[in-house]
Amino acid sequence: LADACETLTSAKTMATDFAGLVDGSHRHVLLGIAQLIMLGELAVNRALDNLEVTAESTV
Image 1 (cartoon, rainbow, N blue to C red):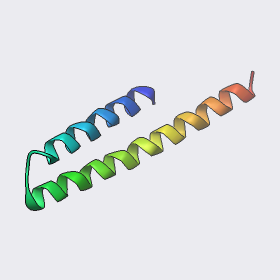
Image 2 (image 1 turned 180 degrees about the vertical axis):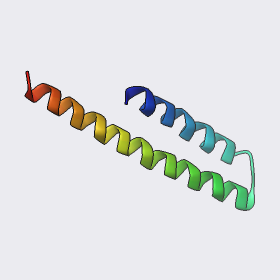
Image 3 (image 1 turned 90 degrees about the vertical axis):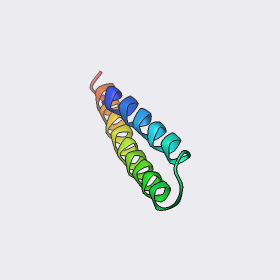
């Protein structure tokens, strides 16, 4: 999950950076993709947090 989070962070950064290089509707599409990636990143972070809580409660 940690690797997935880092990969999603990198993908979000690439999409956002690339959006800065284009204009018009392509920029909006790329920014939308960056937002979707961010939502995936948040979901992975939540799963990671829940996994850590479970691991701590069993110790």
